[in-house]
Image 1: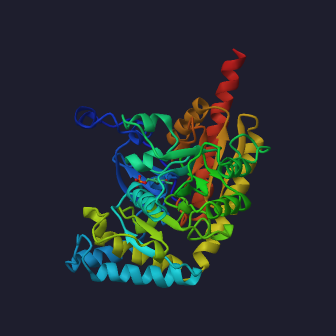
Image 2: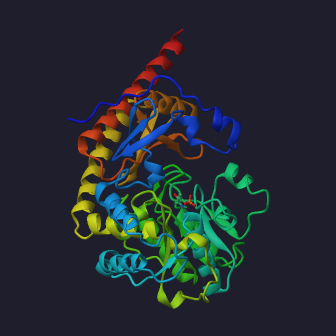
Image 3: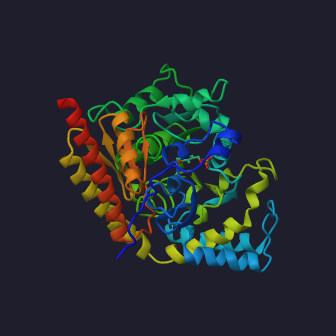
Length: 437
Ligand SMILES: *Cc1c(COP(=O)(O)O)cnc(C)c1O
């Protein structure tokens, strides 16, 4: 038996936030409660309300909130006065992480990557990846895709598609050529062939790129899952034109699509990979950029960041790798739950057609596309009123994105999906009623 959800009916006093905090805050507007505790796939608010969390820190909590094995490792480390911050000095915690990552992630997959601990945000890992590609190739242009999301610092934002976020920069965002992602013009237009034609043509107008940068499943851009053949063709195109392939696995990595890396089942080996979000396993800031040893062009400290030595994150990440990734059982379980999720979302899409257009995604990174962003927003609000935290993704937030913790129990996953289904049903019924009046 799972604990029932019990959303708090009334909004809390948020006067301090209104008075002190910048208007830039966003998620608190969707979920106006004050959260105080979290465990597994559950959030608890200050009035005792209990919510199922299908947001999971935008994919930063793949193992759930406060997983006991990860949390205990960190509690023991702190109790023992373990070093918290070390810049990039040698520490036992960093040594354990690097050794565990090599043994559990890189070696079994035959991946020969250097690990670069960047500043602790995904955006900073992307900045490092872009610098490496540009320095290695001596080129400046980078190809990135429609609906791509790579972070908010200027280099990463140049590669990001969203116009509102780009406008936040207040300066030209240069050095990137936009290419259409797979399916951007519908199923009949081959966007890999288009990009190939443009790059092959010496007069195509695209400067030869240092890198082609992509998410195999676009997280913020609408849960668009690229097919393996398309990704392979983009990889071949990068090789043909002397560009590096960068896979941004910040949201789609750490098991989200059913294997540790999202590209594992796609038959490509990127030159550069970025990881962040769920890497620490506990929601702590931690990012890495992985790249081929021959591309290790850095001089000491040439790209740094004060918090690149977040030892609490190293300890938690090591515990997460040990607990979840030393055997294949977890990945198999994620694939199994991914199939349950796919079947349920497909059934929902069929039942609520045409207001739900389709289900999309891969592994446990999936969503349903609603006919408009406005309707999706009402479904998200109705779901929250029923005790489910879930968000929209895509250009108009029209894709309701299920990012349940990967470690969620089946009954809790199903309970969350039941709430989503009942929220959809209620909103569509209200719609029909107001259309009839
Ligand atoms: C979240 C995200 C980023 C940026 O990470 P931050 O930690 O927010 O800087 C980059 N790429 C993808 C695919 C992401 O989902």
